[in-house]
Length: 439
Ligand SMILES: [Fe+2]
Image: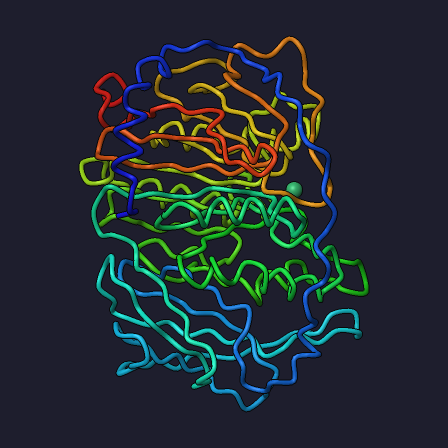
């Protein structure tokens, strides 16, 4: 479990009643600090001539007790091998995976992208590892707990600006078990070295806790006739466990997994994959939701890039087609919360179904405020819809602390001029524990 999470839960429990019955339809009056520029480019991957030195290391969960380690080297001969153990400097275990690379616009060739799946691993345990047998860099991660409580960090549209750096510092300052990212990672926007600088920027966090991501529009990077393959860099660099678990999807653009021994089921949807009835994603989602055993699974979460509910003027209606196609599936499966990105602001809705408040619908949250270079979306539709509980155009990140089988605490941490401030919070009761939603 995340260290300190219990203390935070206890402190904020006092506020629970007021949160659940608190004021509705708030548009925050907070005055935001000025935008920040993109961070200076970190050293180019092609300039790093250290051969087998691993870089851009990140980890993601595979099933209940394995972890995928992904890293990049310049040396073609660097083996896709991870050596690991529970004591620093000692690596009695190892696994060898695969290596790939890609070229883009005939101008850019990626380094060698390696990944290896290691395990079985013990839960809630620190593992030390090195990649490609390189002795110069030791990394470590902690495996997620196999029971509740469990703490997620959720942040979208991260980018690589000064605000991104602040957001990452705030995320790192308090412990957590897993990061979920609902799309728009690097804002490389066709310029591939930005994927490398992004990989370096997030490595300190992404090599230490599993980062589970889904795609946004900035990952598409398709150029008709010249680069006809969508998601080329994203799929090569951020492979997720779409082929693992009880419900393999067959596509890196959407997948699902369990955490905390199956107490929480997380569904990563693809806003930019086909989603209409009859499509592969729709059919997969239908099957995935049908497998949920609410006697065992307390909370069901979904992440998507383009929000299905949004009262910001930015990106109005862009998630409507997917919502029309899939909302009934999520509602029928008693999904507890849907987290989206895309809109560069924060907004929390009450439980909604078909546009109206519904006690058995998901809570909808837009958390596309990680710190990207496009700036904030600060124009809202007025009056604020009844279903929109709180909205504010500031950067920040969210945390979902699933305390037990019935309650989870959601908090939004606004950057607030370099000081993390909890600007919104709510306790979410699991729909599985609500008899009225399970007749
Ligand atoms: Fe986006």
